[in-house]
Length: 170
Image (cartoon, rainbow, N blue to C red):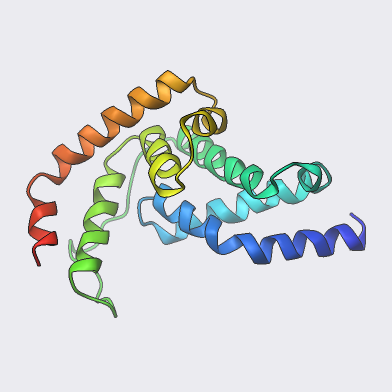
């Protein structure tokens, strides 16, 4: 890669890394280490194809698509769905209060959803993408995105139960 292209890539990463990490954190259902790995792998893939990416209409959308597909691919490759557990309690957090409790509750619910459902919810409601954009990024039909999104929201509501109203009233 030429120095000018490398500088362009470095500037792109500096501008997009935080947004990619936030998306990866949601996809990983709060697993910060997995989110970092996803971003690193996605940015590595973008680097390899930077000449093509730099010429794209929207390099940020390209990187976001690579991130989501990397997440889905990783979930398919994993041989088990093991998750490390501690003593059952959360570590002390510097921030506390209703927002923190709500965020942790929502991340816990997302962790219980299948990866594709999580990806649809992230793209549609967190990233505010259209149905067509989401379908293109996930290689699904528009109707599949709509039905998967509807089912994922319904499942999330069931998993949340009364805990959401309890947290909001705090």
